[in-house]
Amino acid sequence: MTKKLYYDSAYTREWETRITRKLEREDGIYLVMDETAFYPHGGGQPCDLGWIDSIPVLDVVFEEGEILHKVERFPEKEKVNCRLDWGRRFDHMQHHSGQHLLSAICLEVCEAETLSFHLGQDYATIDIARSDMPLDQWMMLELEVNDQIYLNRKVMSYYVTRDQAANLPLVKQPKVTDDIRIVEIEGIEYNACGGTHVSQTGEIGMIKLLRAEKQKGHMRIYFKCGYRALNEFNAGMEILNGLSAKFNTSKEEILDRIAKWDQEQKQLQAELNAVKAENDAYLAEKLLADRQGSLIKHVFADKPLKDMQNLAAKLTDQADVIVLFVSGADHKVLLAQGGESGLACGAFFKQHLADYSGKGGGSDKMAQAGFATGEDAMAFYHFAAQSLAPVEGE
Image 1 (spheres, rainbow, N blue to C red):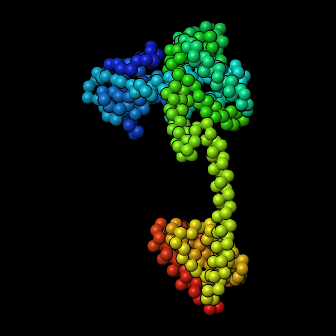
Image 2 (spheres, rainbow, N blue to C red):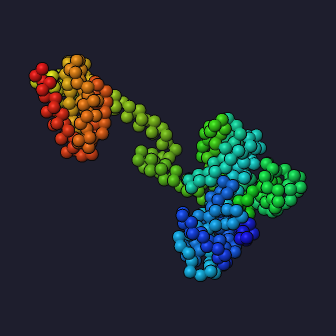
Image 3 (cartoon, rainbow, N blue to C red):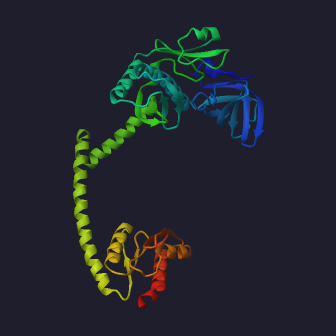
């Protein structure tokens, strides 16, 4: 049986050992070793990664009492040197200890038990047994959990028997009955756990609560610890400094400046909409006057699809016409009809779009399609114009 060095000390980074077994499976090759500090998946904590004789470790799993190390290839020697990806391991230690501390304080402050824990690549979460999270409790929870970090309480792990475990104030009684591993945060919590942890709460660095959301009747709290929390802060500061430079104002006045900018944009958009409406009225009048028969067609250099739809609706409301537009900028074609022309726009597109690598559709009254290139859009536009031309003479 492999000796689990991560239980002797979570701080073991390098060690030498011997390979005891090699396995070849459909999903890859695996090693079993005399000793390992590579922690396998379990308890909400992802596995460790690293190197065995400079060969990358891709995954670590626990199966039937054995720890299997998935590697890119077999080492050449039986005696190997192993090295952890320490940044990943310490991140997991910070977050697992942080979760224990957060869950304990959450039980105290919010009277809510932790139901589950997940440690992902981007953030960590706990689901707690309550349906809401008032702002005052949220702020108190974050302040209290960080106070406990600054007190630098000891984090200890040891094994107890079933009878000894029954006498400890455990949050939840363990399922195992032998060699029960207890992780104790001094003066805070006793918890049955098989994960890797820091030795003192100060090593967690800090816990930053990010957000809370409802999840199946419970609350899910997103948080980051240690270096992840620092990186989160730095990323936020980069955005804040960028906005400060963009709006030429201090960080403290950015929200007021953005509110003012938003109001200015709404005013400009209202003025732009009025100008567009006036232009569309003029253009609609011109297109109706210049049409030959019932087909109105036009090529726009850069008119957005929504604007073409608005203009087409204005035209079909005013007369019994067929409207065919194309926009060169975004490679879009629009077809619309008013009255009783007998043309089904959506069906026409469905029948012919594939021949021009177009995608789209619509109703009998209006349809639109997009094309990969401007050449495809123009080719379909000319085809549609030619196909619909006979309708002019009817």
